[in-house]
Length: 382
Ligand SMILES: Cc1ncc(COP(=O)(O)O)c(C=O)c1O
Image 1 (cartoon, protein in one colour):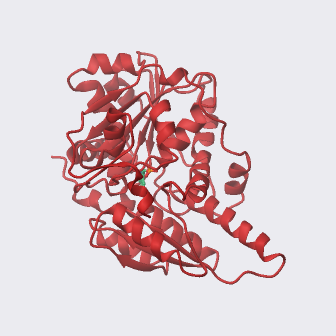
Image 2: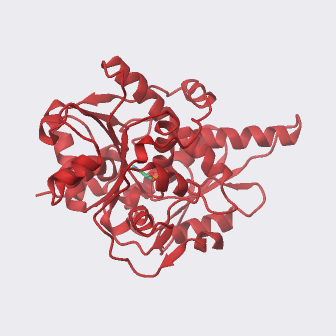
């Protein structure tokens, strides 16, 4: 996977600005929407139900906007994070192609190989188990032992890697070179783009649900802002693809941990960069390199990007818990990012850059529940 190095590598964590804005992104029309068959596929899965879009008026008052909704991914297809949307659709596409190539004869069992900060690997392992396939999951340092056990409980083989996420991805890609193995990775690099593209398509169901749920809540014009937690940027790519396939859409804000703000660093340099990541409780966001297929979407389609500390994520998670939404540190990052942008220095300028006013509708993507990420149990906001 040496191609991942085709991004500019920044050997030590560069000084990352806390905020980046690109005026005019929300009027750009960038892409075609995801294929319609994705939603229908998910609806056919036994555990499928739309996840709640919960309105939280106290947050609207706190943020001085009209309405705030939280898309609560704490229970998605039986797992405590959104990731199974991507893994299920990508594996479906892989197996369909394999069946077609076998031309009527049943293809033999396959090993689905991946690297993970926790949630994606668990989702791939679950999908493999349900479909009678094998899974081999590479886990970098810093992933909580209970998150590792959750993957093992899906009967996956787990290889713990003493390096960072990018190194785990490299080793997974190597292992997937064996016969009857396929890499199901949620990040892309030149030469490896098809499967991550399917994973991004899979995430589109989340956005389609939000559309329907907002209409049901009387918001016909769509949201004014969507805040997205970002690791490699595949989820953000799905969000950009969804909202930038329309003539005009909401402001899109990406939120990363300060210890792993590779998208913020890339936006600031106007080119994708790999950074050395540090430790963060936002394990699912602890990634050093933006996905190659996500990057052009993020560059052109994000209005703003912000980085938050573990403490800010823990405080946001505690506030969401008070309001009845279970949110792990990655899930709470959206609220943490918006709070940091609006209440810190430059808050008025940031509010204007995001086009927020007293009647704006904000959607925060809470991408995992507290159960997904045992780091949450140690997040002491006080
Ligand atoms: C809970 C959670 N939220 C957000 C993300 C970020 O997704 P992406 O890496 O596609 O940016 C992840 C990635 O693993 C995650 O686990």
